[in-house]
Image (tube, rainbow, N blue to C red; front, top):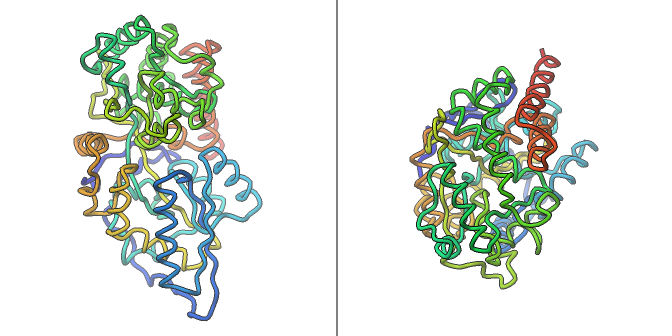
Amino acid sequence: MNLSSKKWVAASGAAMLLASAALAGGAGAVLAQDDEKVTVNWWHIQHTEPLLSVWQDVANEYMAEHPNVEIVITPRENEAFKAAETANMAAGDPPDIFQTWGGGGLKAQAEAGYVKPIDDLVADWIDGVSAGANSLYNVDGTQYGVAFDQGMVGFWYNKDLFEAAGIDEFPTTWAGLLEAVQKLKESGVVPIALGEGEKWPGHFYWAYLAIRNCGADVMLEAAVDGDFNRECFIKAGQDLQDLVELDPFQPDFLAATYVEPTGSAAQVGNGVAAMELMGHWAFNNFKTYSASGQGIGDALAFANFPEVEGGAGTAGDLLGGGNGFAVGANAPDEALDFLRYFSTLDVGNRIGASGQLLPVVIGSADSVVEPTLSQLVGILEDSTSVTLYLDQAYSPAVGEVVNDSVQELFGGRATPEEVAAQITEAAQAEMAAAS
């Protein structure tokens, strides 16, 4: 997997984050003496197996080699992590190492002084990690984090339920997807699972339809001028409205969560719903949150988001992002040294072999042997652009408006024009305040 030169379309203020193969040099980390005790607080969201144990194993190995270092690990579910992170940041107490998705959220943390610039501290080893993946954690030319995986959003679907509904292949066009939804409903199954109570899962639909209608270049223009009143963004809302009007989701989807025993992941994992639009991480969650703990086995498949007839975007334009770790402003250098260890090829291979994530350590791509996840690697390699999740690409305030507005469209409380106008107002107001 070579993502070093991948074109990433992501808003951080008015800038596009592009891959950079070279970072500034420096002196590197200065570690404490062996008799000086150091504590590193590490927060992450890999709270289920197998990665919960993989992360713990890596920490145990590092502590065995550095007996004076104690790594205190706090794993949390995604939303619980965000709430705790917000509280700690507000109290001026960021964790030493913590989960980040880059983009506008990391930019805001950097401007507030919550995260440490790390260019000099990682210069002698960071080029062993994909520069394209690491670009998501670079703010205005300064590195604040290190990537550990990279991925994309697409449709996970149940081949058996599709076949039972008379659908031989996953649709490659939006019109074809709407037809498939009708057939699935007629067969007696829930066509699509959606945990819209959390808001971010639904924004994937509007974002992808915007990419398909507008194309990557216009997505970048909107990131610069904050104008989402363009016709292609309104068309994205209209296309999504066409889907919503088919009533394709499980009952009470507007209040449903993603990862709970009754959440959207469980709907697919239990064979109740035929598909879900979700990121690469969903592969494991279908198993974890199914009643059997095994998911739907070989019936699970993955498909790229369909093209929209007449749209400027192509199947090569993806919605995606990745996971990385940022470093708190007051973190000891041992935190950076642990990230060095975490970013070695051995750990990258273990991440790939887990069958849950797509590693970004250079040379680790072959460790991804699970066929479906290998398919995602191929789609990423063939992509022409990747737009960062919009609720992460923009500032937290604008990202919240994106999620809220799209949820209103799902609930029939906003029109496509109103969604575009609300996002435009938020984006341009922030730009005006910053100028």
